[in-house]
Image (tube, rainbow, N blue to C red; front, side):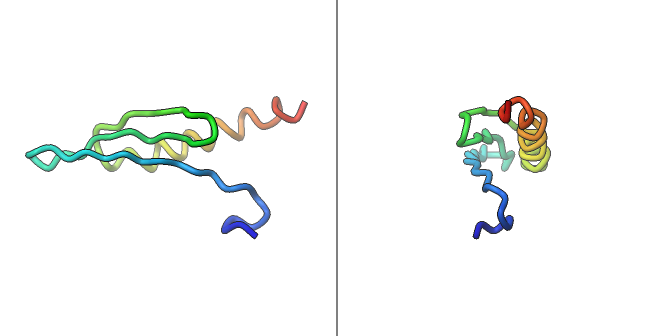
Length: 65
C-alpha cells in the first residue's frame, strides 16, 4: 500500500540553492514526465507541487481514453 492509500504516488525532485544573502532559489521537477518549474522563494514550492498535481488531474480523463 502506498502512503496515499490505493492512489499512485507522485514523485518530485526539489533542487535548492542558497546565495550569500540567504535567498533560496531552485527547481521542482516532476519525475514521471520531467516537467520542471523554477522558483525564486522557498514559499513557492508548495504552490508549484499543487499546480503540477492539478495538471495531472486535468489530464487524467484524456489518458483513460
